[in-house]
Length: 309
Length: 259
Image (cartoon, rainbow over all chains, first blue to last red; front, top):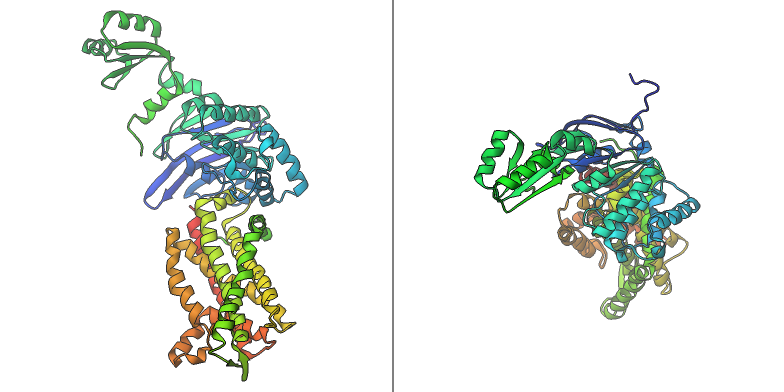
């Protein structure tokens, strides 16, 4: 039983599973997202990220398990839930035949929002997303970054309490990515609960309070970006290019956590600076660097380095 | 499958109307010009060879005979093309249905809205055509006004069939198959350009199975101001046809959209 003082999570996913025939896309995972948090689902292509969030916004029926959004059962009350969330899908789903403003009008009608309210909200959303100048442009005339901002803006027309974003910055140039991040950060400051999927670690590290790393439909790790780094890689990483064999013997004897990629040796060092000095001084190598561990190190360590296609 | 269709389907219809209005000039052109071309070709070109056709135990001019066929063919084409190519583009290329499914709308409402829209487009085309052919005195009023309702009913019938194909084809090019095997034969053999009594007996029975035959019968009777048994049978046939095809369309599309 939940305590009365304990706030109810916005999303509560219990043992959810999604199968397509013999293939299991999401394999019995559980997680919850609290109000005002930004929660990330990370994973390589085909990990089950999109399948997971599609179940949450009522697009795909669950094979088994339960999802409660705002405490409501997605299997029974999906229409009520969908009225209170905003979804930004991976594909550009704008109406290409219509202008920016018409896209808002058409989309707002799906939520039964009256025209006057739509125009007011659309104007302030266009302003917030720096798209005011383009309100009468056709959706096909917009750049990739503008399209993405417009899709997010359109997802906010019903003033959702939860915003779900499927790879919000995939395919954008660095300027556009940073602009999207800034907007998402200010939405977060306004108290918006955000669920996003991504395979960009810098994106997750910057935006997410909490995240899960998924692969093959399962959750491999869960926590805040910093706690995952501490838990799986330590604070520092020494990367040695073209290491000599003596170094390999040395590090094995020292029993440091390491990954040998052949031409490159990655050492997860707890006493980083000292070990770095020692390695640089004693062994031959092409280059040797000491750097802070990132979420990307955790991700690669957990999901492996082989290509996903 | 849990079928749940609310009046919200009107939102999909409105969306398509908004897009239609954006290019209304282009959309108005075919129903305006097509009957003129046909009437010119058949009225002037053919009438030298065919004096009159016997219809409802009267001799009527050939142009008067085919004018309602042109209306019925236009209803079939409008609804069929809208719910095959049009709906497929929205579903597959523009991801319009994906966007809708993330809102309070559901798959059944999307399909209903699409089919009702196809029928509406057929009815709009019919109104334009009726205006054009009325200038040539080819429609009896007020009964002729009921042709607009026949257009809507026929539009639901052909739109539902179209939607079934949209639910099953893998690629857009495959629509050529139902057009070649279903639409074109109907265009020619449904009592459109000659009375089906001109066909061998077996072919007459076959023609009576086709929905266009019944739509042509209904529209033709109304254009002459007649409420005969052919019109009644045509009307009943189309209602029953819709009652079978529409749920089937919902079922096939539901399977395609829900992943």
